[in-house]
Length: 270
Image (cartoon, rainbow, N blue to C red; front, side, top):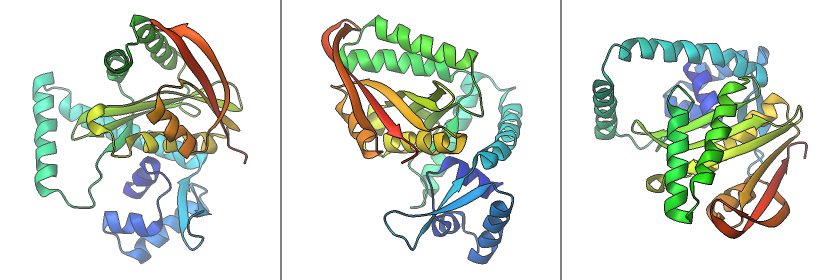
């Protein structure tokens, strides 16, 4: 279960990385991975950077196998924390973060990713509204757009073809991204956000990489996204992930005049 969990939450790790971080005997881990391959939960792909290394990716079947196990684990944690008052819950999370920091090993990740849960959509709307006003002066029209996107996501959520990832660090949300179905073959990446305090940790790149890997496993042929030309940090992430600018036009929106809207696509069949 732990190996399956790591495969579901990492962007194409190697067996060596998994064994090192989990402290597993190489032979034991190799047997687990072979069983996953036999059951078609896992595929190995050669690394483009080093052909001697194999990257591990969960298949669509692997993600389907992981989903109920992940839900069961969340339910068990919820059963423990549910009776506690919200303030007490936060103290528990803060205490766990303090323990993790005190023991902090070099291999501990700077952040983790998880699926959305109740309450996350409110955070996504609030942080988009506040950050984009502070940094770009996007007004309430933008916040309303984000609210509609998150509401549509919850109303029409298809767990086999759509996903929201929340990035966490020491118990606090630091980022988000969504992948939603636009058609049977095209997925749309939406609402990429990284908190200012977490920028430089690779959160944005990791979130986009998760979208790409999930889209491939779900059978999409293309990912598309819509952004603004002035959002240079996000554009750099998209370009680094292989997206290509395919359209741009000037428009007035979000209380700003002369914004340049851009559409970027990633051809997953290439």
